Image 1: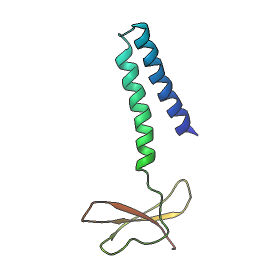
Image 2 (image 1 turned 180 degrees about the horizontal axis):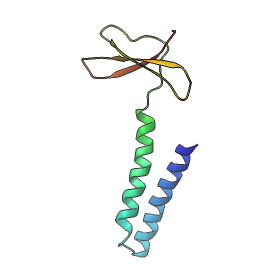
Image 3 (image 1 turned 90 degrees about the vertical axis):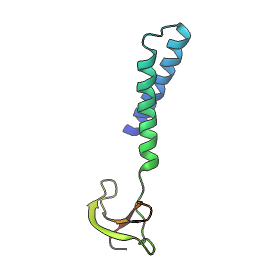
Image 4 (image 1 turned 90 degrees about the horizontal axis):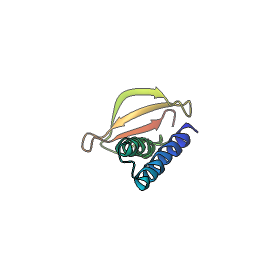
Length: 96
């Protein structure tokens, strides 16, 4: 819910920047554009970057990091695996 509200605020700021541009009010334009872009792009990037845990262990070459945590959304314990070749992380639900 909060994510949707922040995206709406970011888009509203970008629309306000368009209105400022059309009205010739250039003094506030850079501030509104930068804030709108940072807010909208940051929320969209975070959503794209977040990886949901998988049910199965990763294939050969992956190493367990020993890191475990409780996922705040699902409440399940997650184990982290690491691929030293690519630097990618893989999140696996424990007990599967």
